[in-house]
Length: 323
Length: 200
Image (cartoon, rainbow over all chains, first blue to last red; front, side):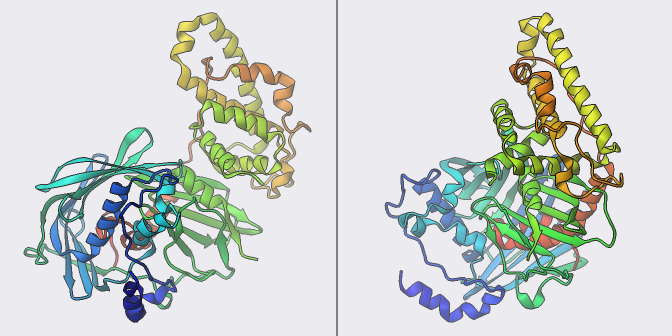
């Protein structure tokens, strides 16, 4: 246990940019199920931890589908581990000919959302972490992309978040399928591998006319549109933590609970706006825009993320200027 | 200090998603809780702003809806238990509408400061009592109707302009948001598939 933080501290400079200390410890799962954590299930949390590691540490490539309502998109994904860093790529096979790349991501660079999934050590210390906000259960899974899966049922313990059904590769822990469940167990969105190979090499490339380099939160590359006056979000649901450390004047804040992410955007308007709100939903994503007067300044607040509209509204309502 | 749970209920109420217990609890608490009232008015201002009604007209509509609810209640009472039994969902929505009425109708709108409707001054609710409307109509009979009576539901106003604005903002901000989803959820780069049009 003890040597892990040391090892990572030595490399931390590569990843630290956003002012987050990416120090973590590898959790142990022996006898960790604590009766005091409402959603704790040792087996499920063990799988969750394994999933968060496999995502970074395994090489694979495959075809993934995204279904939202009647819409289906297909994409090619690949993930290659080389030494102590990984590179990943997502290529759209339907619709826009776009590709997203993330190169040379250090393996020790664990962002807050993934750290939240690694709750083993905390449970022993009496911290429930994500098990405070979701109830977990393991079931026999189905076959996904030809692989036998274990199914993790993830049920929210409050109304601030959605539920999930995840299918993990029984051998590797890789996440093969995610269903986002809304109110009344309605499937809002579904990601699923259609084919999968545990090889780094991806097959011949599709036609691509745009390549986007995925960003990595870092103050130096921070949001261009800054505001004159610093602002803050005074309320987020329990278990959500900031994904990076933007300045008080930055136009965006993002938060994660390990399974969901939402972002808050603030725009100062040059003229008054008729107060109101608008909501658009797309699959598991809610986009909530609110026009209002924030102590003398007309603003537009947008909360966008994989959370119910209630959550978005309450977050928007808590935005205030920092005094 | 207003509890998180109460604000959550308020928001749910607005979407007609609050359950009967929540409605009753809210009714009990808004009388004593100034913050709760203010939050409720802010939520409603946001929601109703584009209905095209000035605030005063909104109040008139709302007090009318209580009368309609009460009238329908006696009509439904005559209709027999079967029909009442089969309409619990509608009743819940009505309970929410009535609760909205209670709070808005009694709210001293001067509290919220701004006058977003350009009426050149701060609107002040007609009743001095925080829950004047319900008191004048009889709080007991309104509460007694929850969950059992079928009554007309107020249709939410259309919010075409704000919906369009929300759609534009979703397109504008989705990619910035997804950059964080891609690093902080277990799906890796897959969330980029949610971006309508990926930019470089």
